[in-house]
Image 1 (cartoon, one colour):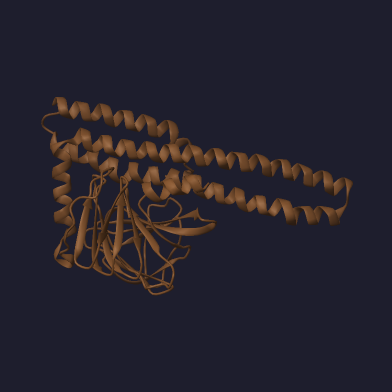
Image 2 (spheres, rainbow, N blue to C red):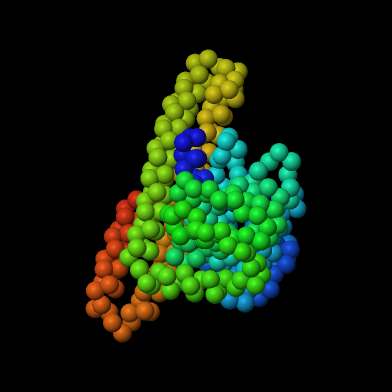
Length: 338
């Protein structure tokens, strides 16, 4: 599983922390919490956002979340922010993801512990800092640091960002040039507009990048699913043996076998399920929030020119991506995911 988790760190877009909820301490507008695949309910002060749940903000919405240890998370307008869980180095951890939109983080300094943050194909090591992550509808990301330092990694290349610095990363590419960070003066909507324009300049390349990302998630899901299936097979064999022990050797031997053999396997199987589900939901989020926006932007752009060769090429590639998704990801989604 260590190999799978290394891939996870490089390829997904999370903030890694010990598993914990995030409590709503302030909000503006009418943001929503999506739970169990629901369409969403309006959040309120004191609500706890738990793994598997999302905060969704509209154009005039804003949410501030608080975590134990002094961590503050600010969810900007037009953002989808999700908490998920995954196993890493033997511990269950919370993964904070903004597939689209902007989220600002303030992490307290934890002695001897480095937190890891990523967006798109970017990964960053963080210790006691304030920074913002922009996630564009084309899969690109922007890291900007207010205080402290982070190390951003993508495509095997690392760059250090200190206070007042930022770097943009196009999906699947090495980090760009480190530039001055404008902080609050930089409006996400302006940056997002630039990213949309860049996508429309070469939509095929943009969608191909996301297709490669999607395939990475699919491959990771398949590998993690195989591990889960094997652990489930072992668990069933152990439970068959438990039945034999109970009937042939007695209750005391049964209870000892359950405690020493069956219960650890139950935990292993649950962890393996958690990991493959993480990759499944990550691919689903990419499909729902990035690919769908690309499609809408193209349809809007070519509304009066539907026979345009570039538009038709995009539709063909989009159909190919959708077919792969339906074959490899959709069968592993639960009803509540959708």
